[in-house]
Length: 162
Image (tube, rainbow, N blue to C red):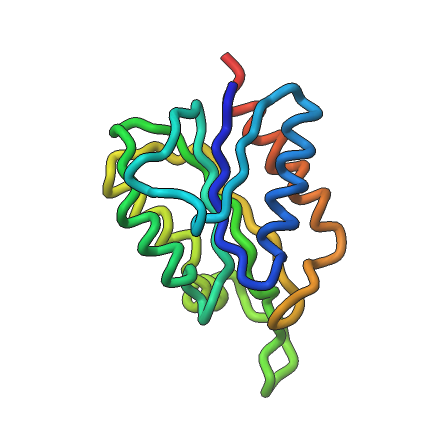
């Protein structure tokens, strides 16, 4: 199996997640080619069995550069993909101090839904999605983020098994 991983990393958090993903998949004997989206032409992506796309969240949406990259991706219908994003960690309500509900968070955090919509419109097939939280505006990543990446890798390994 060959995986192509394309990420947009503004402060290095996405790059760290991509590196951990590559390490974990390589340990399972899977080849992974990791690229920042600035280095890739979305109209000429090399062949792979699975594409993983990643973007940090900005104001609850993927970076504009990442959205444009996904809009221009040219892959055949049925191509399999997964999403692994870095998003702002949910914060308690400033007035009440209570954590927001999943519904409230989903109303504002739309990174993965937007990415999914762009790729599904091309006829691509999502096999998994995951998220690693960033605790501050520029980082660091949440405690235990490597375990989340390992769980995501295990999910992909299971989804890819015959």
